[in-house]
Image (cartoon, rainbow, N blue to C red; front, side, top):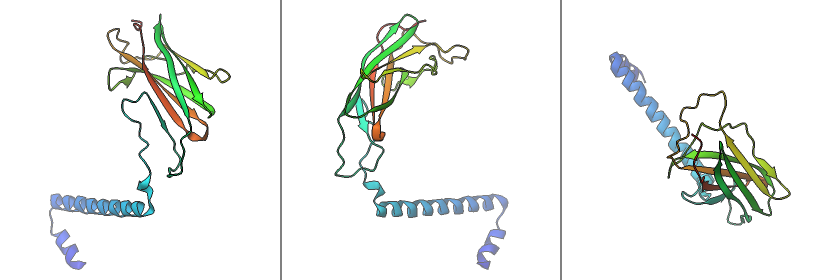
Length: 184
C-alpha cells in the first residue's frame, strides 16, 4: 500500500488526474459487471422484449412480469379518423376488447418515418371519451400565449399517435396519418 502511495505522490498533476479517472473507470466497470452477473443469475433478463415494434399500426404490452403462462387479453385501440377541420386537427377512435379503458392520450406528430411531436397544439385540451359507446375524440387546437418554435407547415405530413391505458396496466397504441391541409 505504501509503495502505491509513493508512486502516486511522485506523479505530476496531469498524471494524477489520469490515474484517478482510470481508477474510477475500473471501479464503475467492475460494479457494472457484478450487477449484470447478479441480475442474470436472478433471471431478470429472461423476460420477453416488450418494446414496440417499428412500423406496427397497433402494439400491445404489459408492464407486469412476463411468464410462459401469461395470456395476452384481446383488446385494441383503433383510430377511425384523423383529419384537419379548418383551424384544428381532429382524431376519432374506438377501442375493443374485454378490458376496461382507463385513459387515452393522443399526440400530433410531424414528419415521415421518424415523426416528432409538434409544439403547435394546446395540450390542456383533454380527449372526449364515451365509455358507453367505447369511442374517443381529441381536438388539436393552436396553443395560445406560448411561443411556438416551429409553426405548422402545409407541405409537411402529420400523424396522430394515440395510447390507450387499460385495466391491469395493459397499454396499446394506434397511429394514423392526418388527412387534409393544416391551417397556415
